[in-house]
Image (cartoon, rainbow, N blue to C red):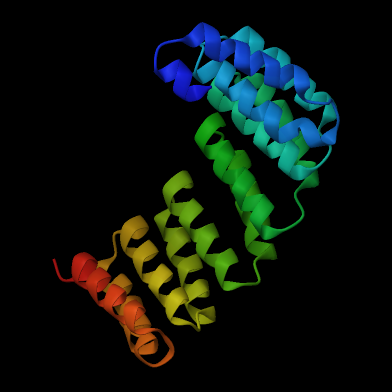
Length: 220
């Protein structure tokens, strides 16, 4: 339907959207398809009233973190309705029970509501629940790119570095430190560890890929 709309026949595309909407049974399994239709109603057809009706149906069926998280994001992004998205995010917070859910929600609150005080509270909770390399790395990325607190992010990247063991982890850390903090020296040091490890633990194509990435990011 999107391709048809892009080709210029929005009336036909809208009919297809409506047919799909009417075919979706209203229960907990309807969340994902209705989100796609609701976002399309707004972004493809510019029909916010239609999108709002669909999002209201989703809210009625929603019951877990992912449902409320995705709906809150769509309401904020597609409708620009901060009051409604704030209400949804508040309910989402009651369902957030691990580092991933907490920093993901904080990222959205920074991006769509620009409420740094609320986001900081969630980032602190996420930090207290972080227990893996990926937790620390992704938390640090959000602190830098969403909250804009590079000092806090640097501290969290240090925690991630302490847990890094594989060449893939040191590669990710090196690139993220360079891209988010702008710290080429620390990024280079981490990626150098990735190069050392991939030469013993990786495939030949990975070694070549890492060498190319290193040259592109740290030798320019």
